[in-house]
Every structure is written in C-alpha cells, then in structure tokens.
Image (cartoon, rainbow, N blue to C red; front, side, top):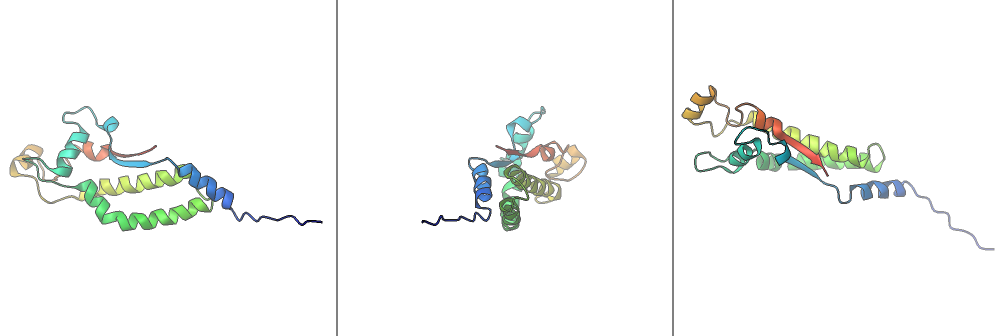
Length: 148
C-alpha cells in the first residue's frame, strides 16, 4: 500500500498567478503624446524643452530629477505594496496603478516646487510671475501614467 504525497500550497498558486499577471505589463509615467494638448508647442514639447534645455531655455530636469531624488523612497513603497500583492490584498492592476499614481504625483509636485534656475526677466514680464515650470498649468496637468 503506497502513501500519497500531500502538498501544502501555502498560497504559492495565488502568488504565482499574481506574478504572472504582472508579466509583460508596464507602467509609463511622464508626458505622453496622447495627453499633449492642443496648444503649440504642446505640453510634451514644452516638457522636453524644460527637461533637457534648449539654446534659450536652461535644463530643468523635473522628471529625471524626481526619479533620482525619489528612487529609494519609491523602491521601499513598491516593496511594501508588492507584499500586499503577494498576500492577495491587492491585485496586479491595483499594484501597477499605485506605482503610476505615486510617480505621477511626485513629478507634478516637483513641477510646482521648481524654482531654479528662475525665469529670465523677459519671461517673467511676459507671464507676470516667476515660476519656471508653470505658465498655464497645462504641462503639469499633462503628467500622467499609463498601465500597459
């Protein structure tokens, strides 16, 4: 008489399913062409000019700078939420949306807080105020995340 092997799953199937649900999925955060707006230059182009600078605009790397400043904090938050995913408290879609919201909100906060280098005097006269990355708020509002 043979004895069968009793397998205790301990949640492995659920964990495997959640990890599999993340496979081939991604989150992009920043300025996406579909959210660029109607104004010319559109929000994506203005973001590019500010992020990397031009002949007349100094670089104000609000996306790369936020990433560099927040990457450890983001890694800690993502690790905690990944545990929630593994324990079945959230699903893969919720996890990815959390990553997107967190990054988007921090980038928008950086746009609002950015102060150096200041606008040129001519730009301040044109806008009526000195806020280097804000003119109408359109570029800030165009910072979004997409879960693919």
